[in-house]
Length: 325
Image (cartoon, rainbow, N blue to C red; front, top):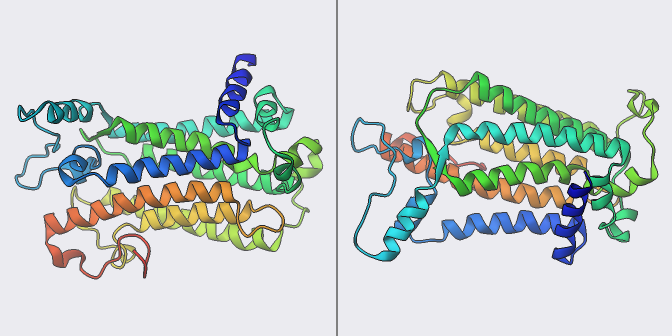
């Protein structure tokens, strides 16, 4: 554990930033990395972005991945083809939620006993963030909701998965894994001050502790969005392979399950807002990563539906955010 605390401290020290700002910067960097890939010309972007059904050729009945074909045109093209060949099975998505749950459990123990990994981060949190801290109850509620989210998605991976040869570029996998590990820290890091000054007792777990109005309003939003996302995943699982979704939720939005995901993280950012703040900025920066990644995938999904079923099939449907996108 000493090695872990030293590693955490060394990483934070190398950033020359407060731990909260460093975590926000990570989310921004991950978002910019995704945007930089999308900004590539189509001939380059097609190698790295599409995955799953969206990477399936529709020019024939075969379910083959449209991976780059060997080319002798230039050294640069061959190098890009080689880089794009580093792919992992699409089923690796399940690892995101395993990592989320295990990381949440790890940090729960660290916070409960104020372990060395927590202390390594806490010593790098500025006085400004320590003083303007989430309450201990906000930390507990946010942690529970994050565990609920990770557990539900893991269960859905088991219940709604179908055998598939689909794969994705390894950078997608690394970014996703990094996001869930970082999110398990983001959920409590702005409450470091309260965690350091408060020793948890059984009284903290009593239901008699009245929630704030913000928590009272946002928890139902989180639960409704989670339920809608679950229904969307169940419906997509029930579809005949590569059918056009016709569920009421899909008649207005191409990817309503992505919309629900964004609402889930927005509700967490609102619930975890420190005193005097409208939103938890660390979780908000994480939400930015979610919106960009899912927005790109939603756009690819709409293009794929148009290619396979015709432009009229999804005409008038928003990609992810009604009225905006």
